[in-house]
Amino acid sequence: MVAILVIMVICVSTCVPNSQGTLADDDLTLSVDQKVKLDEFNAIMSSRVPHEYMKSEIYLVPWLRVNDFNVDAATRALVTNFIWRDENKIDSILDEDWTEFNKDYRVNVEGCDMEGKPVISLFVGEWNLRRAVVSGQSDKMLRFVDKLFEEAGLVVRNMQKSGNNITRVQFIIECLGMSVQQQLCPRCIPFLVHILEDSARNPLMFTRFIFLNIPQYAVAVWNNIVGPLAPPGVADLVELHGTNKEAWRDILLKKHGIDVSKLSPDFGGDGPDSVDLETIKKNGHNYQCPK
Image 1 (cartoon, rainbow, N blue to C red):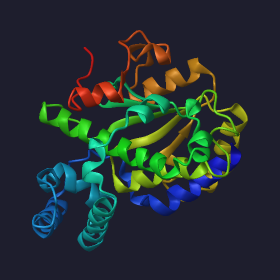
Image 2 (tube, rainbow, N blue to C red):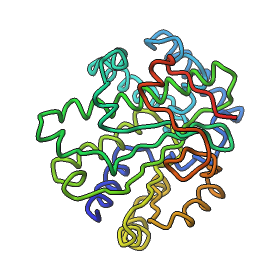
Image 3 (cartoon, rainbow, N blue to C red):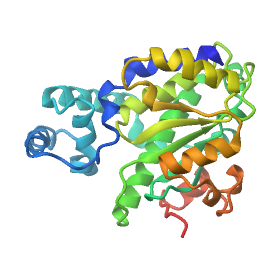
């Protein structure tokens, strides 16, 4: 467990721009100078983007923010992203059959926070990553991670079309039952690292990764040793909580606007059952926050 914390810090520091430290800002609130930069960026990219939704300000602004509104850097980053999407056939990834993976590697939409952002839970503690390695499904598992981010982005865009004023999701990574054998074996680590790499390809889609039910000794190592040594702003992207449910329920509400009592029974809440990815797909990737 301590090893994975160190790997996470190294990965985040190398693949996620430090300028994500601006996470507290309103995503679409721009100064006059920033609006000029956005117009310049839009003019450069409008004829190069492969999809109409990528011309929108709500899509382009995050690429500028994570590059400190350097238009040249944002252009390079976005073009590199387009090349990666093309090489990995991301545009058709949701059309593939993910039925078995969705069943074996549980990811749910739990509800919404108080601002209307959907709360997406990854039950990594249940994921048998070693089985994926042993069965020769390593590449498919990495692609499954890519699919999760593409799916989350589509859910957010569909919510925006329905009039919801949101730009991000909340990611909760449930680690109850995590074991060295099944999730932290040497050949399993790339799957967890890939989640962090994909976060750089989807800038400002999330606020931070919130890990729950981490062994207390690992939380102490993170808080006292690993986190303080991380580059500026990086530690803010990873938040670890132990197995004291009452403690993290209170923190999630006060710090992140997530009222656990309104989430699904999986988190001890009284809200409706969570929605799995197969149901989300059948609904055309449309999701509305429970009332």
